[in-house]
Image 1 (cartoon, rainbow, N blue to C red):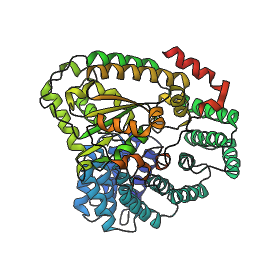
Image 2 (image 1 turned 30 degrees about the vertical axis):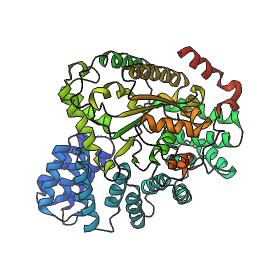
Image 3 (image 1 turned 135 degrees about the horizontal axis):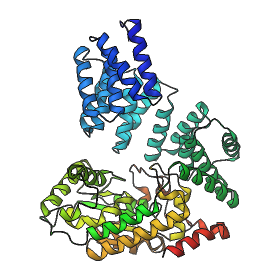
Image 4 (image 1 turned 180 degrees about the vertical axis):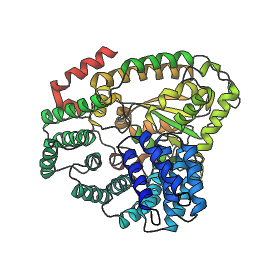
Length: 518
């Protein structure tokens, strides 16, 4: 804010404090006054744009930043914030260009590198993300979020020892950093030790840590107890962590059941597709989290014709944007959609995922919750293959309960909710499969473990792929895996993956819930 009068500096500081404290209505007039008193300085405009973005006015924030850039075209922070606004507007390619330019204009500024790395990681460009996040940490060694994201990216790249080092560095800065404990706990081939147990228990006794950190620490402690065979302690830790998360972000079982009923009704009759081959490039892998879907994707990604794209958000984004355009929530508008509408939406999805077909003709989209949209695919992407993965319900349910999910509210925080979700989604998929049996195929995790070659051949056949022996040694495939199973799928197939039986009668309430939901 060099060159600004002291009174204007105070206005900007006051506006920034109000925004930080969750008072945007108080912040806006302060920042507008600052801009009016210093119309030739970009910094009041930059803070105003941050406020406008924070209050969901991204197009207005874009205009504000463009005004600021006319004053100082080579301001790195302005280009950095412009990238954030462009990303919020859905223009990720332009946003990446803005962050790249900011990094070039001021290489020692950490935030452009951080934003660049974070978004490259979300796009699956893991190696580039690692390089950018290392730059951010070079210029800001105590930047905790950059250390966490770098650890996550290294996990996805299979560089587990380097990832552990990043998470440990984060814990040296902040021992109660839940994201660091979550990262360490998710590397399931690297067990936490007794010293970690003491530190976790010490952090849980503190009263000054955030609830989100307390949830993550509880999950990590539960995983540690399980690894040490202390199943009663593990059960208690998972129960406490999930109870807290459920209080923070309650999930509505009733709303879920109503959605399933509406989706089944709305998708019963769909128009014949304009192009029955549209979407042939796509292999959707859907089902419950923790049901083996990452393993099935790893097998397919070992095939020379298939790119493993991991969990892509684009099918849901296309549906959401169509709902916004129509002003009607999904799936209520489905009966009104014409064949031309579905063709348009299918082509939109394919355009958004084009980068995954740059080197190979087919790609996987392994977002489990895409089962919600499986009923419309016979109209929208009729050429796509859909693989539904299922695992023993008790193992699936307990594994979900032990996993801390980013997206909240989530059914995984309550055993009864998990049972209802398994029952509802499987019932829906049974109906969807009955309507499109040539495209929607059921594969079971335990069957793959019991007879790998036979089941892999069947999987490839269901996807219209020729057999390739590389799929039999999929753990050797070099690729980025952006899920909680990143470490496990890089190991040879194991037959001892069941964990629920060790808890004995402690899981009887879960067994009863699963039986009741049938």
